Length: 347
Ligand code: ACO
Image (tube, rainbow, N blue to C red):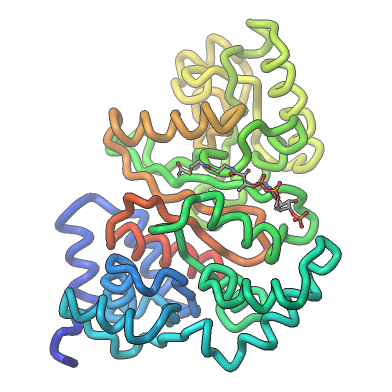
């Protein structure tokens, strides 16, 4: 079956021919420069298997897929996909299951988990995959083609937890606009915290700025978005964003960050100069922090659908080790891109 394998060169050509994917090409190149080990818990699913082939061929990551080997092989055979170079682990028969179960029990016994429950949980590929990352047997995890966002996030939040010094895991989307003046921007939080407090919103802003630097390679200018600019409207929701702006400045005094700003004041130079004169962010923001998940989730989809921007994410930020979610409507190339992003986060 060796001849069925493609090559990394083919994948890169495929990217360039199909869409403008400059930022993802850069991320793929970075992932290849220092190869990390990523686990795909949804190994019995067709798109995961096809993506695994492309990732292995392009040398983007070392891969382990989880599942019953017979089922994984049957799924691969349906699409004539070669599994060479891809490790398959069955959580139900793995020799590591017992040690993962005892580590999981130690981590969660204070929350009421019993030894029997821990042994049962690690047979679930989602939990087994998270334990691989926790125990250092993989550098990162990508899942969500068949799990809901909540079902994917909960084990990661419970077991892997926040980076030291960070109190809140959140997410961002890397948006690549076809409009040159906007280019690559970070939108946050669009997937995790439904109704953040002012402190959580400040944490989201600081984490999004770090994502801008490490993933998008841009120097962050952070706008704390609202329906008000600099007190133009009065409402509890505006007060929350003002308080978050104050806290974010306290948490990261060196950061270029301003708020509260309306979207046009944040990204249109003439409006920014008019509504927030003297601001070093207004009119030039490249990191947009939304006041809550309704605004963030709707906002990124508007830009993706009406603005024809590429949307990469949700990318978890603030988590101790990289775990990323997929949309259940994801394509094979979305999985490839998410694995590359996860691998770069692991570097
Ligand atoms: N940061 C850090 N830890 C967290 C966070 C967070 N943001 N949220 C929950 N936790 C921790 C809790 O402290 C808890 O830890 P513990 O058990 O050790 O005490 C654990 O995670 C579970 O917490 P719960 O409160 O029981 O979890 P909850 O049921 O609230 O689920 C979740 C958390 C999954 C993130 C939830 O907030 C959620 O569903 N968010 C929305 C997800 C979603 O549907 N997004 C939109 C779709 S995605 C898209 O369109 C791209």
